[in-house]
Structures are given as structure tokens and as C-alpha cells.
Image 1 (tube, one colour):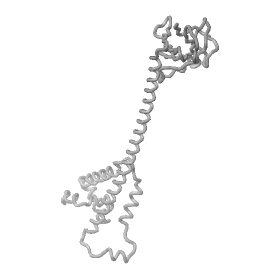
Image 2 (cartoon, one colour; image 1 turned 90 degrees about the vertical axis):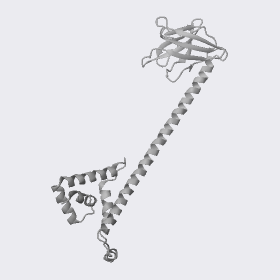
Image 3 (tube, one colour; image 1 turned 180 degrees about the vertical axis):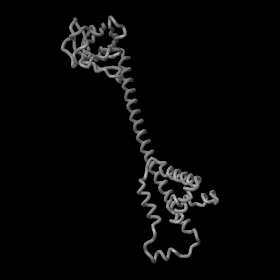
Image 4 (cartoon, one colour; image 1 turned 90 degrees about the horizontal axis):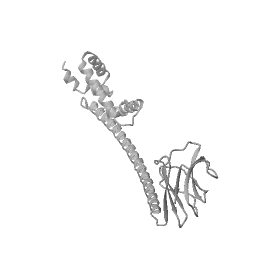
Length: 259
């Protein structure tokens, strides 16, 4: 027999799609076992069909596809309708009709997969767009805050004082005191991270007496911390206190400055 001609006759597609008659199926299975070329061609078509139907991220369960195919190719039960449909046709016309229906079914499933996948991609892109807009809004807010803080530092009535550590020059902070509004701003340049039960506290010193200016909440997104107002001050100091603060300093200053 001519194997190439047999393979190209369409029997493989008919068998895989369930369009072949019982006799054709039996003959095909027998020849598949006898000729490796036929078996290989069958495997190749099945793989191509599977890849076509599962190329999308959306899958249709096997029993659903089987039910649809069975509905398409089930015999007509009404005998009168069957007689009308079975008018004289050329040999093979029924086969062609079934092939067209099968092809339409595959195209319909593929189109549905494409539509769902496109919808999912659109939703993903919309989420990414919203996330980018939110990030842009946060960045703009941070930039505006930095501009306001920079404006404060440049005001002519603001005095600046560097707060240094006598034994470690890498540990320091900066005080900005508005002598008109009496507002106090602190820039934490480099302070060691405190233990979980400790917290830094800012003090103003006047006549060697400490004045509480508040606790320091170290945050990486903050450049300046607005502290409590003070009417007069000769110096500023930061001490490490129990979390929540103390009424008077309990440790020596971590950093100290004089105006």
C-alpha cells in the first residue's frame, strides 16, 4: 500500500476527531500498529491539535469538549427529518460537512480562548497603570514635602546648629530653629538605631535646664521632623531614653549643639 497517500487522505484527522466510521477506525488502528509512519503522523496531529486548544491560559475540560463534539455529530433521532436530510448526495459530502463543522468548532473555541486571554491582559495592564499612578502621586507628595522643608531651611530667620558627638564625628544631627515663629525642626543625619525599648528625645537647654521638645520617630521618608516650639534656647541635645520619653534626661547626650 502507498503509506504517504493513505496518510494524506484525511483518515488521520477523521479518526482523531471521531469522524471515521467503525470500519475505517478499525482499519486505521490496525495499520497504525503495523506501520510506524502512520502512528507517528497520528501522534503529530494529536499534539498539534492539543497545542492549538491549550495555547491560551484558559482551558476547557475534556468532558465539555467531548459533549460538544458528540452534540455536533450525534445521529438525527427524528426519522422523518432523517429522511429529508439523507437526500441524494455525492459520496464523501457528509464527510466534508462534518469536517467543516469540526473546523468551525475548533475556530470557535480558539476565538473564545483569545477573547478571554485578551480580557485578562487588559485587566492586568489596567492594574499596572493604576499602581503607577499611585506611585507617581506618592512621589509628587514626597517631592512637595521636600520643597517645603528646603524652603524652611532657607528662611533668613532660621538658625542652624550642628549637633555632634564628641567621640564619634559620624554621629550627628542638625537643628533648625525659627527665631520668629519659635518652630523647631530636626534633621536626623546619622544616629545609631536604638533598641526596641529605647527612643531618642530632643531637648532645648536654657540656663543649664532641659526643656522637652519631643520624641524622635525615625523614618526614612522624612527629611525634617517638626518638634515642639521653644521660646528661648542656648543649646540643643538628644538623649537616648526609655520608649515614650522622660521628664528629664536620664543619660548623657548622644549629640549636643550650641547656638
